Length: 390
Ligand code: NAD
Ligand code: MG
Image (cartoon, rainbow, N blue to C red; front, side):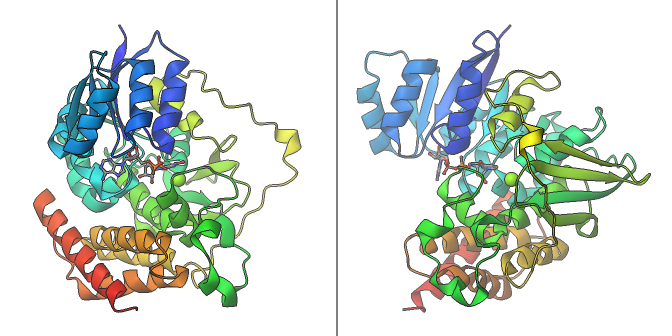
């Protein structure tokens, strides 16, 4: 029997890589639903190739455009958040690859429906933490990390480890590797002149714009620290960020007996995607085998929190708990967008987030509504900060 799969965010970098792996294994997977926000033409092309039952877009206008493009096809075109949640409940497997807070509701819906959830959308977990992990445990969902670092850690853990189970299995530390992004060696006094073009040019990975800027500020690693905390039930003190500019080791697990296990590979997201799709089996992903003799050296160093204040902010938010990570995440999303639109400078991203975290009260997490409330307050405070800059 083929597994049915919904891909939330199919037109994005992760979505396209997921379809690339799926196309290599037509005997295993049947696409149930594809979703995109505004890129209707790309979505229509994907629908022609993969013949899903549903296609979901962000607005009525986009839906009307998509219907015209698919007039000769048997695809039901829907739009909006309710439709995203509906299609997330319909398939055996859900790839959560929408960027940012917009992905939270459908990803949570998939967990609540007990699905196999392939989690790329780290912001959803950062925002909802305990709530999301509880939904996974209470509804018997299977959560498989797709973020390359977390997928690597998952591969280095004992086979019966289940994210959310709280098992510790003799783990002493999680070593989260980070490339350091494009500004690892940049003269500190010139950080304020960084342009969006320079920030999105990642040395090792090709990714969406938001995560590329996050990698340049290292907020991406900060979000990943929080993500690792929830997935692997690990305290902030037991998660160590290690700069490894080559991006060959995707992360490591250090055990109490002194062993350190690592997962290596070429930096291509199709490897963790294929692992998530086929787990616990392995399937071909299209990624070239790592040529270990060609790698002249592997370097490691400690991160510089002065150069990357966003990384320190994330540790602070994790330690504070409650809605602090959601507030930080919302402020970061607004800041990154404003930076990409050249309304604030690169160093102001961290300044804005600091200001919003100081301003918006940290609350106890009760439910999704409470999280979204603090998210909205943080976005408003962030917009206010931006409007005061001119
Ligand atoms: P992207 O910008 O390339 O794609 C984002 C997708 O989300 C698109 O399909 C877009 O249509 C959809 N989308 C955007 N805004 C939306 C909204 N408001 N409502 C509904 N859909 C919306 O992003 P990406 O690089 O593919 O990243 C996706 C997620 O995966 C992010 O959370 C990112 O942190 C995570 N991730 C990405 C990579 C990578 O290599 N690209 C690696 C690890 C984790
Ligand atoms: Mg990552």
